[in-house]
Image 1 (cartoon, protein in one colour):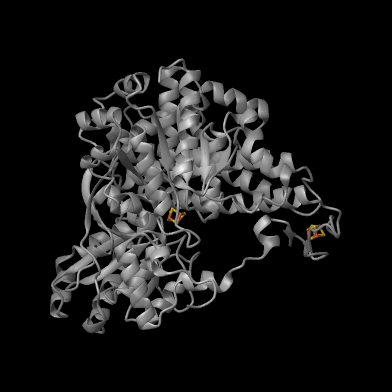
Image 2: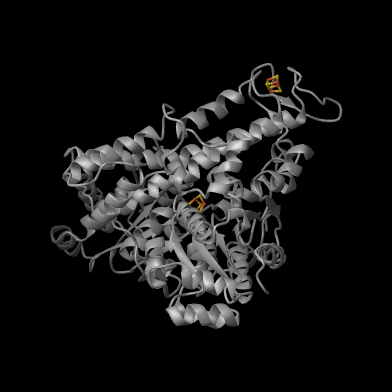
Length: 625
Ligand code: SF4
Ligand code: MSK
């Protein structure tokens, strides 16, 4: 064993992952776990956030011997600036995804594309009316044009605040106003963070972090929320349906195409193309029995939620999916796509195809998707995959397990329908203590952890305690593989949750979508708070990202906290070099916004901490335990 290398059993809890890690060893393929070993131990300055590279008088590293940077910046300012920029990366990622959805919607409204259309007209009209667009007696596309402009306005700063501010419970809004953190516009807040953290601007750590809250709120309540709402309008609002997860969804005798990234704009077209009879015929002529489409990460979540397309795996499964030797082509848009996929693909016959000019990968083929040519480009990509099938070496194919069944599609609309049209049954169940609270477990994988062990065990522990779990992002696949996303999983839940979910025929862990769809959880929290007449911070809710890695996950955690939701992380961001910043995150924020972060790597201890918080909130509402 090489230095810092873990045993395969310690790398992942899953059989499909372990088998592929063994195959990677045999095939001589390097994975994220190998590279983590090479990078360990990490640089302490970077890990604690005390290295500043913001100007060329530096870089400056803070130590006892040198407590100030060349400009005089101390450790608190340096850590806050670094973290502010980290959060800005996450907010920009989600929100630019939201902007791409507006571009697509705008093109539909103006008749500039035949490849996309408005699928959920009722939802579009409902949201247009909510945002003050005149809908009465008007042509659908005229309403769409105005709604697209309304959404575009959210990215600028020419009006006082973001459009969905009306969804935020009043008490919360007042608090944000008093703190000066009501988000004004997505781009404005991100740009202002970059400005504030330029050398010689915001040199007060607390002030920088307060702006961090405002910027993340702009992501959660605008950029991400717009992405979710428009994806539903364009591709359909999810409703409960069956799907399957793990590497067993790949088919040994078919052309396998994986979609990876985040935005459904590309993947929905690929789905249409794989069902084109002409292309299926072409695949058969190439010797395959058909074309199989499966998802990875959040594009996978988008397709699974709406269309029931199977999910091959989450973040740490992306390299391993290629190592099966059965993947002809992996087509990506953006975010969370390891650059290593090109090299792993080169070890087999797998072609990587990029589609967005803003996310190109050296060594991949680029097929630019634009609004007017989505379908044509999707067909091109599928033809490329079929050509690749003829290069497959069947002797190198190993599909390691059988797929696991799941239930997906729990949008808020679907949840309300399951509840009979109103939140009252859920609120009654919360009051009666049958559902003691709810926790959104969201986010990623990180090779520093045993893959999915914390994601799965936290979910298991919480449902045992009668706490409803909502999952998005890469935790979805983890929960699905663990058998938690089917109605039968109520057997693993506490008696109250078992009774409530059993009577509704739903799982105790509900899949609510992709990373941007955490906005659905925000909206659900707001609906509950408004119905009860309290603020989100008063509710028995929590959020968790046990195995997070990305800037986006930190941004999600921050908007959850700023919205009043106590948020658990398995490990801290790179802020621990400043006790002032760390103390603010882990406690001080509670006094400001009614929630804070808590750090705990052990999922069992984390479940207890979350349980204590939920008990405290229940007591605050005068509810019996
Ligand atoms: Fe050093 Fe200050 Fe420049 Fe940062 S901004 S690199 S602390 S001189
Ligand atoms: S894909 S941000 S690894 S959840 Fe949204 Fe998964 Fe985290 Fe990316």
